[in-house]
Image (tube, rainbow, N blue to C red):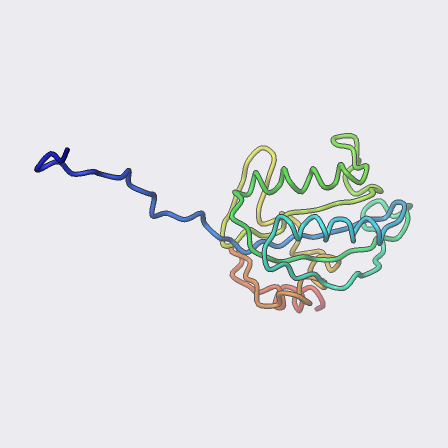
Length: 172
């Protein structure tokens, strides 16, 4: 039976799609099978970050604590809808899969796998557990060189400079 004047109303759907952000992640390893650790991270990042682009692997000298094995570093860039804190949590899960222990890993010390969230779109984030852009990425050739390979035009929201410009300033 039909009731005149009665209208069926569907619940309104949110017109706000999740925000897609370009994210940049630095990868590093200097303990054990360095290349295997980085390859594992790249595979896992492919399931988390869309349109993933990964640099070649760069062997670098350790900075800070220099009495440790050489590092193998890379950078990955892609798109994510994860909020920065959630993405950080996913990166830390990947590190733990490769034997990284937190908080006992000494800053700058040897590690099986280190994944640092460098940039998240044009966002500036400062929480108790996360700072984005990464506070020291502008002074680290081992981050900027691989990042410039895959995303030279990516812009640092704090300085307004591209990754390529930051690298050129570092080289001076």
